[in-house]
Length: 219
Image 1 (tube, rainbow, N blue to C red):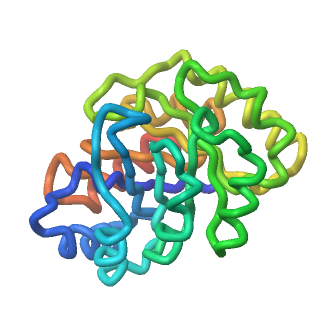
Image 2: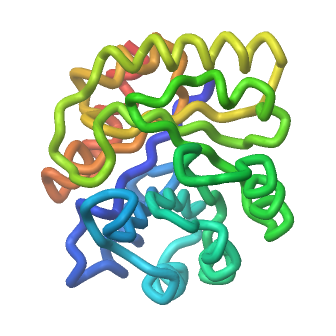
């Protein structure tokens, strides 16, 4: 499995976002992870399509847009038009998840599904052929700085077994508390995409921080 590092732009310096995005591109990042929160599905509010459209001008990296919001269907086209490459919705917030995934792909984006910690994986098994990325939250979504939840690794292991059994190209992503001391645990469980906020942005040397995460995952 290829290791991909997806720095979470939520931890970047918003006053110099263009520079931050360009720095990530030259520092070995694979994706730019963009957390969209509506203040309803999670108790926080972040970015909308206009900001993402402006940021798109500063990076050629794939934008991994995580929609932590109710009624995501109403905004899929706007985020796709703004430059999202992957649109990840929450299984808990989609009344007809299969239809939502179909709509995302019709917009030319990869279709992702995220699961909150309390959500079982069973809902995803019949939908694997329609999914390009599964995001397992290893914290409660809404705020950064939380501790990595090791009990979510059972979920990652189950999903990895399904993906491998079906020879599916689905990417398996984890988000929450990812740092050099936790990434190997998630990698061993079967994750191949790792969202990291403070672990990337904690010092100005993003290349060293990303390299340290990659090395720890491979250890």
